[in-house]
Length: 250
Ligand code: URA
Image (tube, rainbow, N blue to C red):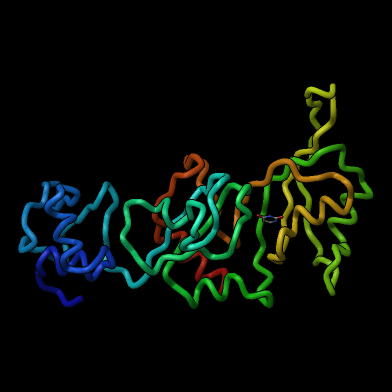
């Protein structure tokens, strides 16, 4: 946008917050702050140095939008769904029609999900040829043996055409659990994979007879889940995070 003041409604529409009439409604309902003051009129002027905040989130005219969500269990990784709440529904401060999740986490999986409207970047992050690494926190039933860990690490047959690519295990620990049927063991570990096959981690652990009980994604490429985000919370990516993803893919 050129270096001169523009009307607030035009600015908001340009930033993807909705049509001109939708953003006028936003202003009228008292959800827009311009330079720290409640905006009252669509004609108020926004300059290069202005700070525009909608529902507590700063709005900018950057070409693309990038959000990090700590996906809670029970929400589907889609833009719309006839039955369930979607991850896009959770980005409540935004009226951005083009936002979509970069890849999918299962409905019961938690953790890092990137949402953007940058299709080219999403395509690169998801490309099987890129082998982008994804680290998950896994809780599995039973005690993972050395042989199990080797199978995960070397690549294994999970019923697809090709075995899985080598994975990395880290920070393995064992816990005793008490349940209705007495005591049982549980393994906690971090697993890094470089593919994104359907239910991949659950299928890998099912194959070694240690079903996954809890799964949470901690990182994707250079992007790490912000530990201060509770499940369901989200924030914009920082410039450093956006640049680090671009560098990772370069
Ligand atoms: N592997 C799975 O099995 N589920 C996920 O959601 C992600 C990886």
